Length: 310
Image (cartoon, rainbow, N blue to C red; front, side):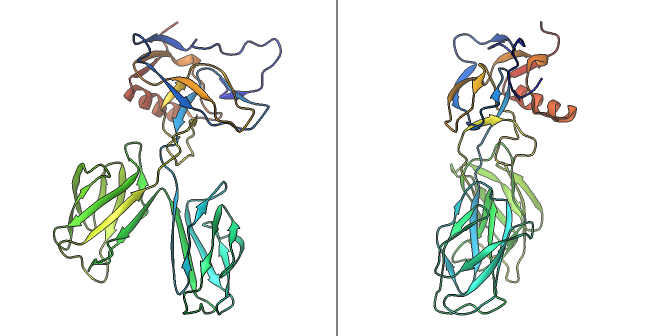
């Protein structure tokens, strides 16, 4: 079944709720959520579309010297990874060539002038030291960012951070008990498992590795991993997404027009239900393994998809 489709005269489209075999009493199985408008007049969501939720956003961290960077605004087209700016002129109004994470040139950044391109918007400010030709700055875009505490002794580094559906937005804080061991709490203050420098860590929805720096941590040093908040908007589940919509979070009850950019309120089955597997709508090109994974995620929510229900 197609996920979104163009209605064809004389062809019956999936009807509202046909995929539901049983639900909990009252409205306990359902939620009202915000659906992403596609601004596409030729397509619409069909009833039974499996949805994901944008629970994780993107944030950007600037690193460079001698210039400073103001607030970085992210927009459509931004890519996760490291953007690299290389200065090609020097001075208080130095210019730098900015490349995206894929190495493709985006444009020229001039110190003191607002820049917009590649999904980034920001302004570099001369801090008095003046950039030299060949100096480099970076802007790292990702779902989670790492930072050592401002008064830390140690200067460990962090691998690329990945997050899963159990991660929550906000700052996770880790505190050293000695040079190689940390305790941690999530943004709500809930205790996490202990972390060991040099070993892969996985808890609270975070996955990363801390590597010792040139100066060892000491007891009391801290670092934070901050997870950016997502929009919370639902859209069709996608195996290639990284914002939370790669995980199944519910099923659309009614067909929905998304011909404008307006984000409509819609009803979904969110929990405690049995649904007919053959009447669920998956992304075009989804593999059997991907569908099995999404069905398992629905089951974890209490939504059981079965092929033996008619």
